[in-house]
Length: 501
Ligand code: ZN
Image (cartoon, rainbow, N blue to C red):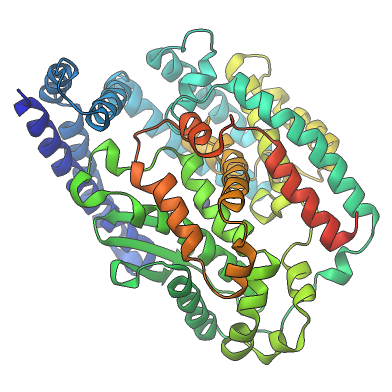
């Protein structure tokens, strides 16, 4: 009776193994491959991608899923597994090959145009390409179908954040934005930022790397099942059972970029190592829920743990020994304040914890309006600049530092931006609940004990794979729907401690 289910699982495990070959090729490309290998690598990756796609979308998979949906004796876990297999199969098979091909070729040209446009800060170069990308995004949304009571943008969200709805995001993001703008204005008015933003002396990359490895081991990242390497654009790749690759980059005069970058990727990596990949590899129950939940794990370790006072109480003597004696000569308060400076800037990827979500709200608002047709691509630069000034209080000097800064829209990632803020919101809400469950969390961190938090995340989130949707997981774990208050409480608390506002 469960023969179909066994066959389906085997089939998906093989697709997962093929996918990890592709991931390994791309990890190698980003880390060690000589530049001369890029053409050959593109060919290898295209072949593997085709094999993975064929395997995951074959009619046999559709038949097997349909059979499994009729098996009454499946456990609750396995029913959730089949539910998510159905979702994936539908998402992969609803788009006609012609549309997939057109999105890929348009995107290749759009990305070239975007690079040129950004460099010259000339939106006119990118405009026709973006118009086409928006049109293709609408066609894609039409193929997926708008969820009942929703809007086309919801269908695009489905690729990154299953079950998320634009109206619901707006309900959470809007109060967050107005409160954050007010908080940032109060912080700015203190004029304390320059004084707080102290910098340690230059630190050789080799010492930063040793310190990064020390942090990974201390916080529970299993180095027998993972690695840390250097790259241009850091990422984490959960290759498969027992193999999670982290990457970072070093700047000698800016140790924080590498340290917080490493902690961020470690958060992703701890999630990957905690998923039940051993017996569920390639199946939804062995995979991460969504980009937002993945990002909640990276943001938690990077920010809620790594930028806490108790982290520095523990890390200070180690940083002094391994990085530079400068750290030992500071007060813990100085290190804590230095890690929590709030400074509005034009570039999203350089934004601090408090201003970051305003950058995301801006992009979410505008791309949603573009998909809806409420905003034309021609009107985008003006709309961007007006909203940026309203949210962050600064006039945008040029499109290079405005609507041309991100790669996402040129490579068809429309509906992706909200997952960054969802990560911050989930991280804060989960962390509040972790604190209730473990009131001594700060003392533990100050003593170098991060295992209790990791255990709580493993138990509440990691081991479930995709058994629950993000919203359901949040309610189970925190007793409430996602809302903006935990993140606001957290950021206000820090502003009070660091800036006295
Ligand atoms: Zn991330």
